[in-house]
Length: 479
Image 1 (tube, rainbow, N blue to C red):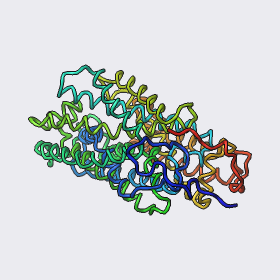
Image 2 (spheres, rainbow, N blue to C red):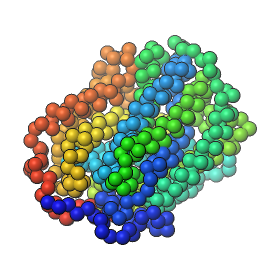
Image 3 (cartoon, rainbow, N blue to C red):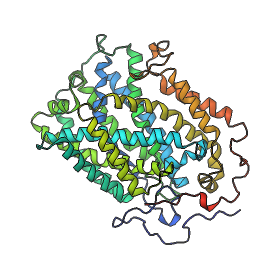
Image 4 (tube, one colour):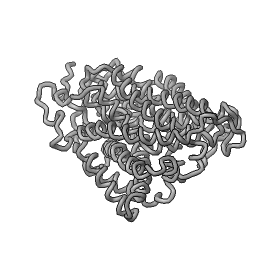
């Protein structure tokens, strides 16, 4: 049958406009509304990762007893692996024209997708926005005398406005932030390198020392996990690109922006980790920059705005994906309100138990993103435009990808090394460090490849993707 792509013959109502709020949400972006250049993905993800949390993650290098070369190589390998996955998923967004959250319906099923989206995107969006905002408020308090709650409300108001205005404004803000943050962090870099310990050697007395290779692999896993927590949002800001856009270019620009930013700040963290790891984040940055500390504090505040706007935006799309009865704008407000509450609870300990919980969520993200990639290349890509229509078919309630995700997560849990839960096989593989992410990817891959050979779980036969899909099954709630 002939598939009529939405908006193929109509004029754009949104396009590249900055004067109106984004009217679309989880539905397929019409052809007439497709716009942009893959280069924009570089500035988007560069600004998104130029945050204090990345710098602080580098501080853990000395805590694992790593030398400078080991620390820098771990940052490079972990970031690169995650960034490539991120880039490939972002490229899929240009082909399907829907957010990453909606793409999960392909392998998981329409309703099977609810659980991973609720856990991996909504909780993650709320948590990471809170973590980054706590840092911003603490930094702002170094500049002006303002109560924590007042500063938090003001920062959330700005972030929410960006997220509510939507796709085009966020891209513009991140372009501006790329230039501003690059300059400001360049100043911080010069000041920080004066405290760098280039001759730092392996320390067996380090608090978390577990062997050189085990420590290296676990530290690399930190940065891999950090990037992977972005992957459930990978297509949110690439889905407007024309379908003809090169997948390779989207992958390279997305991965490049993420890699450069994280290698830059993570690398600084490694170089100054010998003393910075003993301080809290804001105190460490103030110590690094000395008389320039006010500039550093302003940088932290500014860097929070684009990344948190993206999290609030992605969180709102996630609410719509699991059919919470709100539109996109109300969804942003809901996510912001919940995240503000978490921020107030976390104000004295942004890297506390909730942060540990977010790391556990990273363990669950790897099997999810692995299955999304497998399903796209093995099943959805050959369907072409019909694959996008399938994502709105409620008759595909649960599919084998959901079961494969559960199996992948369960297999990964056997190896978890977290303060919240330690897997029964973690000690057995202690000499190799934290192998949970690798185990999750392997478990999910094997389970998916085996289960996909079985008849589909839904009543609708796999050989019938071309049948007309009831229009009422499509997402209709927009901004």
